[in-house]
Amino acid sequence: MKLFKTLLAVSALCTCAEAQEVNPFGNPVVPDMTADASIILVDNTFYYYATTDGYGRHLETSGPPVVWKSKDFVHWSFSDNCFPSAAEQKYWAPSKAVEANGKWYIYPTINGYMYPAVAESPDGPFRLARGEDKFVLPYSEEATLLQGNDRGGIDIEVFVDDDGQAYVFWGMRHVARLEPDMTTVDEASITTLQTRRTEYSEGPIFFKRNGIYYYLYTIGGDERYEYYYMMSRVSPFGPYETPENDRVSTTNIETGVFGPGHGCVFNDGDDYYFAFLEFGRNSTNRQTYVNKMEFNEDGTIRPVDVTLNGVGALRKVKKSKQLKPVSAVASSVMEPLKIRHFKDERCQRTETFSASFVLDGQNGSRWMAADNDTKNQLTIDLGKKKKIRSSEICFVRPTAGHAYILEGSVDGINWEACGGHTYLRKQSPHTDKNIGKYRYLRVTITEGIKGIWEWRVY
Ligand code: CA
Image 1 (cartoon, helix red, strand yellow):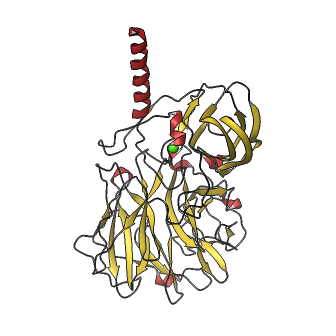
Image 2 (tube, rainbow, N blue to C red; image 1 turned 180 degrees about the vertical axis):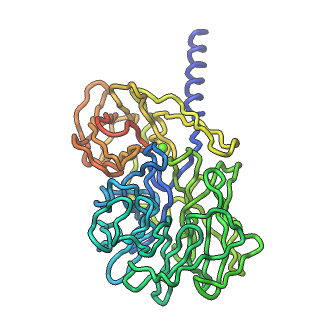
Image 3 (cartoon, protein in one colour; image 1 turned 180 degrees about the horizontal axis):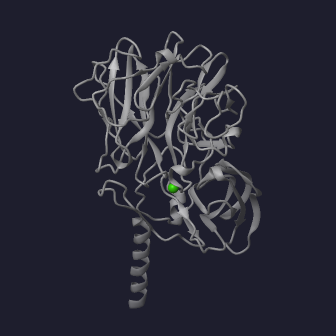
């Protein structure tokens, strides 16, 4: 009896330790590391354009260009590269797609230069809008957005006013008019905006609400990123007024948000949202979160209450019965990773990689296999045999592609293949349908990063 009680106590302890595994990264928008996001809503679909992070080489590289899409703001997907000729380049901060002349334009910074690119639809495929669709270093002469002596610049924000006139904003407070072709800057119009804060600034955000133009700009960087703003009732060039409290966002120790930086503001009818990157994984391992943006009667912006929780569904989630697995076990779990703070000592985080993180509904937590694992397997248990219609797996670093084997079992001993693919596919999630009746599902990752953000079964 004593032994039994001891066993019970140990088992309780284990359950407890498992339950105490904390996800310090909350619930970012998409299940990947992304930064510099721009979000638009077109025909009831949300489109998400961003820098793909998580390739582990700081600013020496980036992930490939992709467009994430969602019908409800909770379930996001992408399939393959959206800009084939830029797939091997350093691709950052693509801005949002804007429609003009029957086409869609984006303005990414590629290898450090800003380029207009065009497609027939908001999810691409995009190509360079001018000259040959080809990148040369340091830049493709005919294709850069700026054609004058100084072609440098980063972080385009594009804005189309109610009269159809388009403007571009970029780092260090620049603004200029775009010609009607959407690919040529009226270089005589290039202006540097005067702001109250005068430090280095990138990631401009620009929008119009109730006849007021809002210009948001960052200062700082890393964990000390902040957004400030000013507003104009006249034009994108000003004159601007700066409200007494001009700060939009800053680090919030209590909610665990460090360095809310380059993102966007988008609206869904009268509801406004602020998307921002969070710096808490250090360097180019950023994730993007969304919170509500509120305004005062006089049009001034209330400081955004930044959190890692997200805003949840913005549309009705399509009814489909999601099954609730009771547990997840893995062939191995990576050792906890202590994340080195960059500039702010208060940012102390340790990431753990428990198998149960694939079932927690949060895009900031993940299972990762240990480096020396030869199986790279994760098994979920539904508690009893159930009919499984589909499986959706969101792998870690999905833009580099995955191949995997999916198997089902009724007893956990005998397994049969029920999904997966042997060739590398770049997408998220990876979906398998008409799986069969099983109690257990097991995934074996054969190619790609051995890790999973989320696994949903229906
Ligand atoms: Ca998770």
